[in-house]
Amino acid sequence: MTRDRGTQHRPAPGAPRRRRTRWLMVVPLLGLALIVAGVVALEAVHPQAEPSAELAVDGIEPLAIEDDVSCIRLADGDVDEDLRRSVPTGGRLSSEQVYGCPSAFDGLEVSFVGEAVGDVLRRRGGAWVQVNDDAYALLVGPVVGHREHEGFNSGLSVWLPDGLHERIETVGRPGVRGDVIDVRGILHQSDPDDGGGITLRAESLEVVADSVEVEPPFHALQAVVAAVLAVAALVATLWARRVRRR
Image 1 (tube, rainbow, N blue to C red):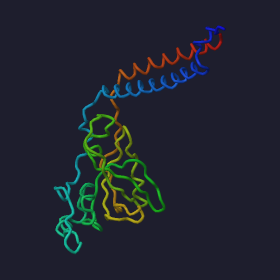
Image 2 (cartoon, rainbow, N blue to C red):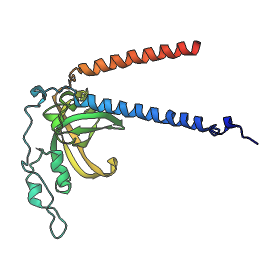
Image 3 (cartoon, helix red, strand yellow):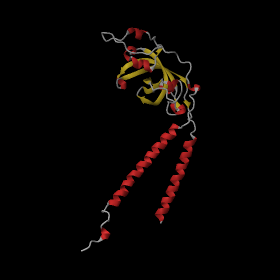
Image 4 (spheres, helix red, strand yellow):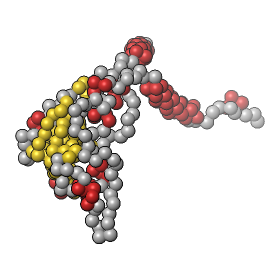
């Protein structure tokens, strides 16, 4: 009795299908990895512009305290009164100084200079706005233009009553430095209307620098890659349609 040798090496049912399924999973992953690597490579060779001196805001009142601030608490829990007395009425503070010791400045009338960013969130009787006083706001402009990092974003949440927030025409966003404003008001360590956060409730506002739009440098290589990929996608689409018609 002999066996049918034609069936001895026949692959088990479903084996080719599993192999094809495996490739259907691997190919998209490889394609995704290539796309990510290409994006990273293009970002690494993106041309950079020098930070423009025109974006530096001049004529700002100097800070009332020149040094960094940190809390010094006394035995009874009170803050150092010397630090509190060092700020004259309406003296300018930075957001870093405020966050360094918010209890020392709670309830003081101070001034704060920065760029209005994000959105003007209107509420009954006024609006909330985030005001940043970091290097991107006052010195070098949005990072999208020069692509150089100058620390982190920092600022304060500011409440602007009706009659003040209307003076802000443009808020900052990628590629745009918003209006730089000088606000004066009462600083609150824990504002219940802002979820207990640190806020400045403004009583006056002055626009010290209008908004500026920043054009990022033209990336020629990125344009070439985009054109090549567009042509490749078109060719692939036409080829797929032709195959389906056969």
